[in-house]
Amino acid sequence: MRHFLIPLALLFGRALAAQQLPEPSVHVEWIPHQDANRTDRGTGIVFLARKPGSGRAGADTVLLRGHPDLAAPVVGAFIYTETAPGRAWSYAIVAPRRLRPNVLEFAYEEAGLPLDSVTADRSWGRALLGLARDGGMFRGWVQLDSTRVQHLFWSEELPRHPLFLWPGASATLFDRPGGRALSRAAGPGNAGYIMHPRETRGPWMRVRLVRPSDLCGGEDLASDTTTGWLRYLDDRGRPIVWYHTRGC
Image (tube, rainbow, N blue to C red; front, side, top):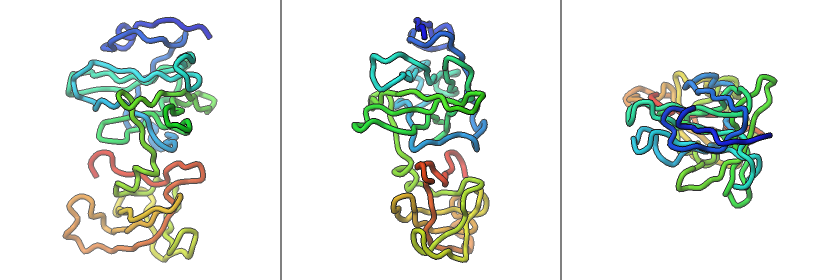
């Protein structure tokens, strides 16, 4: 594959400098919540260290490489652009062919690329950039330089949030991991209840299920609560539960 310098300032509005990207390159803007139920959330996420909307830079770029080495060829990119400094911003992906962006919002109006693996020293992560038309996932390696690019793992992040089940996930609570099913079940979906994490054990989590949800001013309601264990990660380490990244 040939490579050349594409001026991102020309291609992506307010980008600050040229970066080495594959030829040809296809730019696809990500629309929040688009295909949310089909996103591969990976085992964690990589994102820009600078908070969006800070107004300190008009754009930023995360480069994806063919293997975890700065000398490896660039195979794609994750683009951040402030469309209105300090007030509005957007995300996009760049790849040698058209992809459906596998971008995920993980905080309020803040998005990143899911990861499916990291090197032993955690200096590089393999990011899931987008899905091709044949359903295959396009991947590339990102240098996890904490000064510019940060990352987190769902096994560490999810226990910090009130949770709900993704549609289609098992809604059964158990008395212990893999033990006896309890009569009370959660969800699925995110309406009418919330689950407060208590502890984790491998892919299992003990939660306090509250109905109706007490997440948004529901503390005065007469809530029905049940405590039990459920799988919160699947066999590949992907999250079965999720949290409200904005509102409730």
